[in-house]
Length: 259
Ligand code: PEP
Image 1 (cartoon, helix red, strand yellow):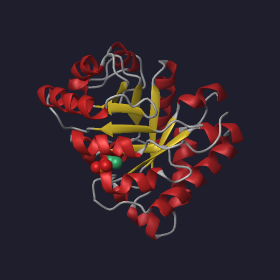
Image 2 (tube, rainbow, N blue to C red; image 1 turned 180 degrees about the horizontal axis):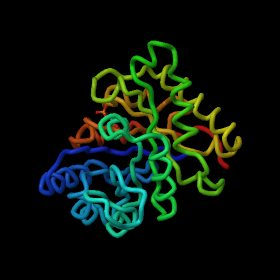
Image 3 (tube, rainbow, N blue to C red; image 1 turned 90 degrees about the vertical axis):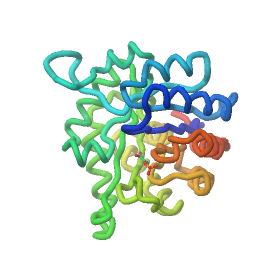
């Protein structure tokens, strides 16, 4: 059974004080939610404070990016071990904003995925097509290429630590959500690609989040789809009330099989 996972991507939002405030609201609202993995991905500057606030709870910490090298002359970058030192267990990689504004290619994302796994960080690897690509009917081709490039060369035993986030670019921060049917179709397609890349066991076991304008009003229907295992949430993760509602929408019997 796949355990749902809901992650909040705070992007470049929240000072340390605001982050601590948000976590206090989340702890009050979430209580004990053992059936869903909940991950908070604040900006680097708030990782330590958020880590301290969630210590002893079931909430986990994630970063929004990292470099693939272990250390060195890479001004402005952060290495996997630095994230581990702050008790991060997850890292978002290849978010469409990184791909678009910082020119991250599948090859770069792939290097980061390997570096993350080497340091025992679970990568949340984002894939998704643009509006133009969907309108041209190329969405599956684009997502398959991203999957094969970003996830190349992972040892079979490590796949269980990989989370894929399907985030159609046209749905991120736009208020326009993929319909549950559109999302389910792509998630099922992604499992098909994983079956070809690795095998049926891995395809059935890897968790695939949906991301793109998830809100309390649409979360339950999206999470109710057979191949959707929770969500990567941007805007609605910045307020305790909406994020708590979204996490609660993921409290459902997990679909699918085990390795
Ligand atoms: C995201 O950035 O990963 C995201 C899904 O953003 P939003 O929920 O705001 O669309």
